[in-house]
Length: 124
Image 1 (spheres, one colour):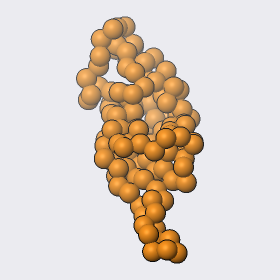
Image 2 (image 1 turned 30 degrees about the vertical axis):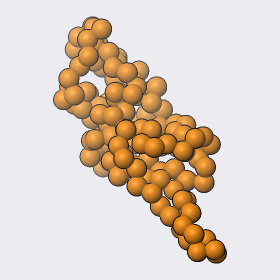
Image 3 (image 1 turned 180 degrees about the horizontal axis):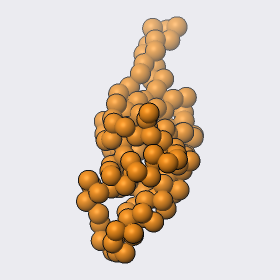
């Protein structure tokens, strides 16, 4: 298995998403591996690496649907630091109401912290 360079993956993602969107990370990985193998039969990419590359691309929209789970320290999608959103309750205490990643758009709230499904589309 050969790992394709970041620039090659970006080019293939753009060309693949121009035609249609991907409703899951697994679907995008399948599309990309099919396209990459046309260039070199040994190319392959994992979902985690693909997600990290796509999160840094300005012209691809990655949407993260969350589900109930443990609150993360870092972004579960791309590994970046998370910004916290607080609200003041009736007793005057700050209460954490959400976490947001500025890099990839991850947004967790109301105990729904774990990524459940990723969708990818091209920004027009």
